[in-house]
Length: 318
Image 1 (spheres, rainbow, N blue to C red):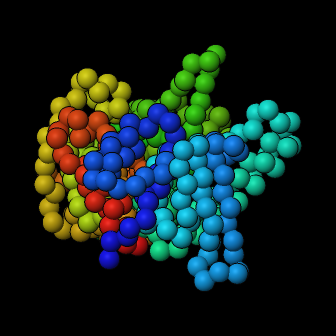
Image 2: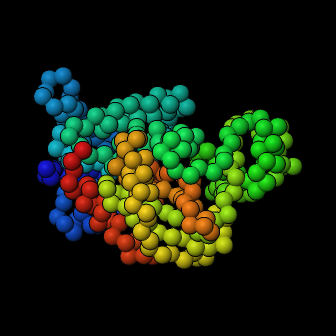
């Protein structure tokens, strides 16, 4: 059954991917209410009632230009929203206000009845842990590169010596600045001689390097699977998008079904998978981004990705 209420989109202002989906929804005449949790206050208001109504939460969500009944929202596209930081408050009050927003506004949205979440934020968070991803991928029969998560220097050195070519990856991307300049960490080679006592501070992820022929990015929207081969000479293709070439491919049916099973395990309806293709034609698991970017891939390949997500959100059936 297709819903008739609005599609809610939770995201930041500068989200090209969300813009593409909203433009497609507008083209179809589907009502959209877009908001960012960081706007809580006069530009974002919520009122929810529990216990005295058949469907809970009952109430309204108001933005500066739109309003929607909570019980009427057919789907919620949880893209890349910002939570407020309340920098104008002292630190203790800011922590209190941030918690009230996350658990008040967030908790209300997470409880929306008869709503399709793309994806549910709590399910996104569970699926975002790389060690858990690796374990689930292995249980489902996907080829997982030998991987070590450790903060023990000797274990790291032994792993690197055993596998010779090893890379370091972050367990979780976080915003990072030095001197006002945004910084990031790429997948990088690591040698045993580089390991010292500093790694004891936090766990690190080390992984045997795959002798890859190409990278594969897979976008799933509902039951639709889109795969793109990304060719470059880069270890981490994100380093230079100008150096990439793209080819739309079709994955083996068994692999497509396994990736759908993977999403179902985490109760997700969409996701962006990264795989590596070796020179023998074998696919190797790298990771899942439950809420990955794909907008540039539609521009580069012509794949109907925004339309696929609009179909999913318009249908609105959990």
